[in-house]
Image (cartoon, rainbow, N blue to C red; front, side, top):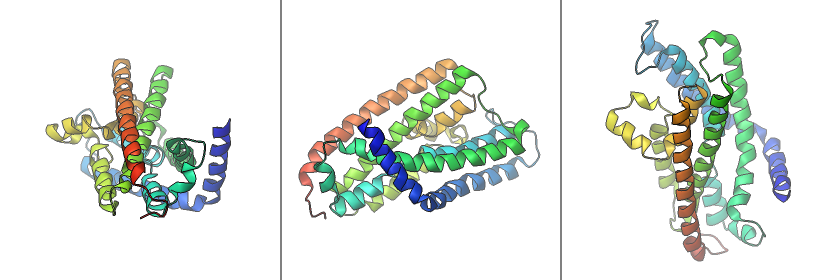
Length: 265
């Protein structure tokens, strides 16, 4: 119950600053629409299918990406690194009878919900205008699997970004690492294009990293492109990544907190 109250307080704050969410949402909206326009020009009225993707599935992919980019990509790392570690704000969390990572989870979640809601509105409008053009999962099991895969993707994203954030305990300027991470996610999470379109070597690298399980596989699941066996396998791999990243976070936290000074950096 106490975490519900914590979530409610942070939701009130995020809703009061909803104009900031609108700005960030439009950033998340612009890139997928730009990529879709590129693919629309590439298909250019030709009824071609490449790697089992046609213009309809491509369009659905990028409009779903608007939701996924807003809902599943966490941005807590800057708050952790700058305000908590570099500015010394971490001190107030250490005195509270709550886990730091849990507090940050409920601090970030309202922002993702609000921005994800904007994404749902855009996708709903796209569906209303071009209903026959949309290809999504329609069976109850497929939808349930898709929700589970998206939830696991969010947890992976959150823990990974927390690891990036607490790296500031060792780094004086973590911005270079942050920008590198954003570039890697852009390529290997499937935000530029479906991973089937990448060269085989790069595609295999993407599948061996956690980022494709944050964005790409949730998108495939909601499009109904995963079989039941593939969905179960995806969730199993996501759980492995969650356990592995959680262990890495705990190790880095225990070692890094010894370097923290209440005055910041």
